[in-house]
Length: 203
Image (cartoon, rainbow, N blue to C red; front, side, top):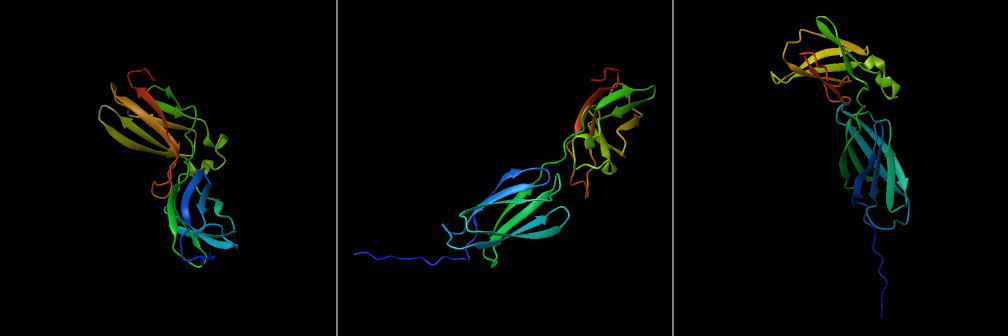
């Protein structure tokens, strides 16, 4: 003797195994599995993307009958931090994860030219290789004095050079140039770093 039992799908269950497949500068590919195996009808998911830096929310709707669902979240910002929540459209239990997008890359060809009483930092425009970078955003420059163990913020510029004065003889400095940080210093580009020995052996 035998009996056939068909279980009633529970639509209050959360999506399973939510994870990130690939993260870029302006997008993230996420993947999850349906709350139960082999759905027999289209399932509507709500994908909520919370921008933890800007404090904004967006919700996307995804319809799929597949057991495994892949979705690309677009229009993200380089170096951003996001909280992603996926649940069925009936607001069932949720699955969530954090995503950090890839920051803008460091400026290329950072070099120093020594003048009489100051130095000039030069670098290539980030806009040459980063389509997401606008020159009006500018760059910020930091300096680390290894003798004093102090890091100083020197300022920002929309140029591709920066003048640094009042360097002390016998001190070793490290200079960093990066895409200017946005929203309270939370979204920065990768820094380009250059060591400089004030005794004259620019490295």
